[in-house]
Image (cartoon, rainbow, N blue to C red; front, side, top):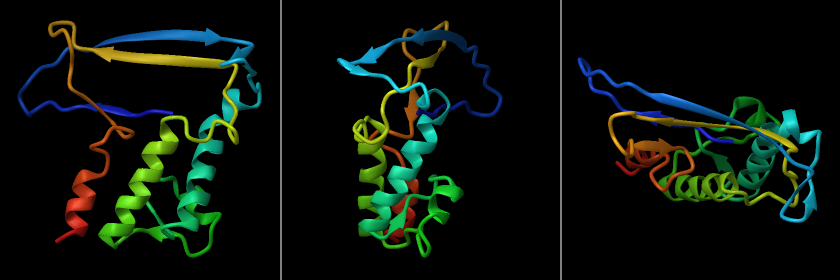
Length: 142
């Protein structure tokens, strides 16, 4: 799972190279992979995130899919800054592989990398980065 964005100001031009890598494995870190996760890993991950957020803090990040939140009646987007911060922590931890025992690794993956061909490194912000949800959290703290 992963999402990224590149910020470009109006009137600017940015060329982006996209690199696709297809990987197929039989095991990951010595554990057999799960062919069911080839098309269901993200759903498993989001379902586990929703369950964890439902337990504590009792609310979710706004970018968790609606279907995942709806599996837990009463689970709404956090409006309290402290609870929101805990929900973001859960999202970030689980996005980085914190559910490996529940959601086994897929056997087939597609890795997509984007880069600016004119700059050695492009500023890319991932939802699993430490800055995820910062604007949302700042809004709640007002």
